[in-house]
Length: 480
Image (tube, rainbow, N blue to C red; front, side):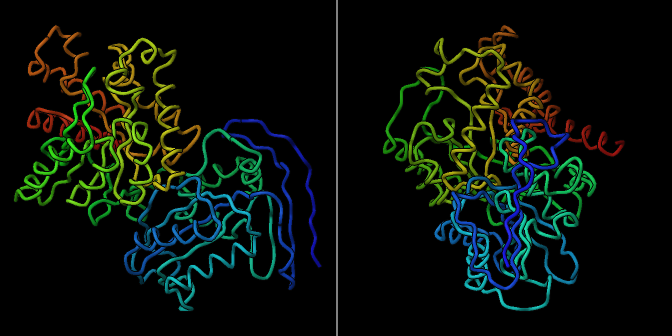
């Protein structure tokens, strides 16, 4: 016997993250033996958890996501990436964990069948329960439905006891509830404060960074725990190489000319012995340049346009499987300082909103949130006062992004105030080389505001400033 039971309908608008209605268009589906009865309604939004601890864990994730897309599962959002200690059976390798939101026309048991097929095709066999596996795919939520059968329980019955599931699940949400479906997920959590209440009871964000759970970004065959220390771009931790000027009013060169300039320098830099432990990013807004540079050995793509100046860039980055730096800029270098592009009523809120739009586009193109680094674009489409507001308002930018996507709000933040014109205007230093003390002040403010990567010219002095800032932040965290 199969039963659909419609619960009390309570229309939700966008509400805050603290309190949730207990019922909102949620439905219950019970099925005993006959699994042929499915939900054949319009597209259903689902949440699927991913885990892997056998073989190339990241490649397993990438392969599973590709197979899901080919099977009628349209992925819209990705959680962050976590390396976690094994649970239940502890004598096994560490896991990678994440989760995705997706839309599908598959019924719940059809979806389960597709996921089990993917697991088998990727080499998962019976084994011991909770033991090692190349891929584990679990349905956490399916539309607004609560499902109970002998093969499938939704919401997943062990969500509330698993931090390695809750963390990426929370990443898929925003602090503002944006749909009735998400409101229903909170309601189905059975906690008076919704899923956020469950997460807080487990320990919440305080769990991240400890030995049992690390938020990481995959790069150059390793997992980068980027929040442990501030990284310096330009000669220290990351070398940024570009052949296209992006200063105001700079004329654009073709992708072919950019490649002719870039590749010889990139190859020479990569051959230097001291580059063995360093990362190289390619600064370009052309997809063809990004592709060729990564083939030659570049580890990151740094795009000042966040995909706005080449319609193929986001798809290309998705195929390259490298981290992507998405910077905020309006227009292009020839128009970014125009009157229209300098109009802001609240620069931090608007930069956050526009950056989130770029992240959304990237994710829909197949770039996981766990590979995205955000840059608010100091000096690009900004006046002096805008740059100052951004430097002091990085927490505001994160909190505004968090309203729509916690995953994006957790992304590494890169700032590049080094020797910028606004520093010269403030300090009356017309020569760029005289702006290093002002740069250090800006970098310091940015780090204390939450910047994780700083792009500088004077490496020695700024590295010292970064070390002092990191030491102060570490001391403060110990005291807390």
